[in-house]
Length: 312
Image (tube, rainbow, N blue to C red; front, side, top):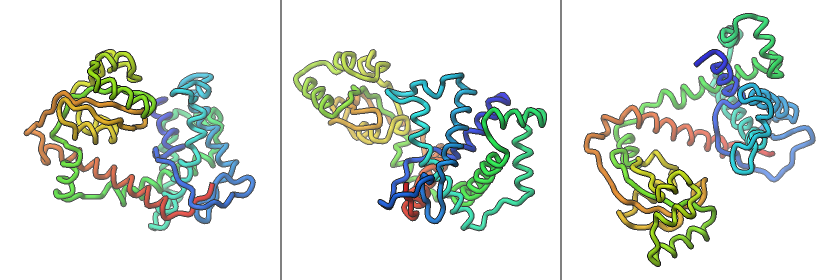
């Protein structure tokens, strides 16, 4: 990775330390003017929110070119609209993680800050380039230091809570079984927008129409649709969970009921199943350990949100 890409990746990490699910309001109370959210006894101001959003925009335009903020990245949604809809939740989660870190006694010393700032500057050749960088992204050095402080506290907190976890073989075996690590299936699907459309597809299949023909005609997944809906062989973790949960329980040749996922509604047909006896707990232990930590991380975030008082 070249220096520019490293720098952009670091800035993205500073602005949103982690990708998260949306935080839920715990109160119907409204926040006062100039405040975007209250998190326990702290606030996220409109000014802070706007400053972060401005950095995002300049980052996007630097990486993807002028006008990137207005470009559509998914059906009906621009990059700017996406960030505007997710930024507040990300800032809330960062605040919860920082607060949790401070309660654990984690702190950043002046020496720590100097080390982190020097490392950041090492991506740039001169002090002049560093100043140009800050100006280019509309950042003050105070903004950068605060971002570095948050990243430092959160990383040290997660190192204690997540990275140092040592799951037992029993826990890993349970995960191995849940994720069906030694299994793969071959399946086809037809993806449509609504449950009603999915039910109509199933009705046509029950009347004898060919799965492949309907997939070519209707599936929103045009890549597999062109092949009659064929997804080839895949493992449990290759697909979104609602899809895999149903697909791996289907008998060969059977058609599923409508399966809802973030992409729409799927009608699934399993055409083959395989079990690989060479895949065992021992061969997959390192992968399973990472999955275990990932699930514990998600659990940690959910618990922090549940225990917090959040008002938007």
